[in-house]
Length: 121
Image (cartoon, rainbow, N blue to C red):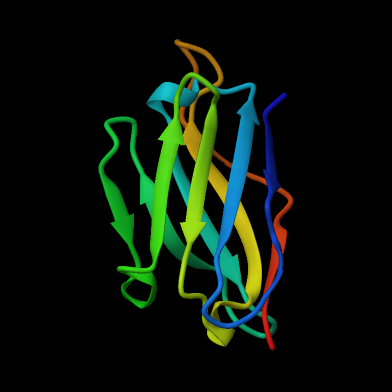
């Protein structure tokens, strides 16, 4: 069974920082593409950042220069460091994995349960 467990969300003032973590189990983490998505009320879920097995990151334009995605393959964990937070960053943040459960298995998408990030004064 694949599990992605997010943590680190909460309430923060504008300009503040948060660090999200996502611990995975049940997939071959080192070869998985790991992503963070977010969904605000009434909006579609959007890709925030992505990092592949080789470490190359992608960011959506609205977070470039403020957010950093990283991974620790030894801990099967992906992180999202969020700095200079804005009110429009308020959303539920979801961890996503695109990977395989075994060496001979197929690739599939997996989701965490989400963690709430609220940016407000």
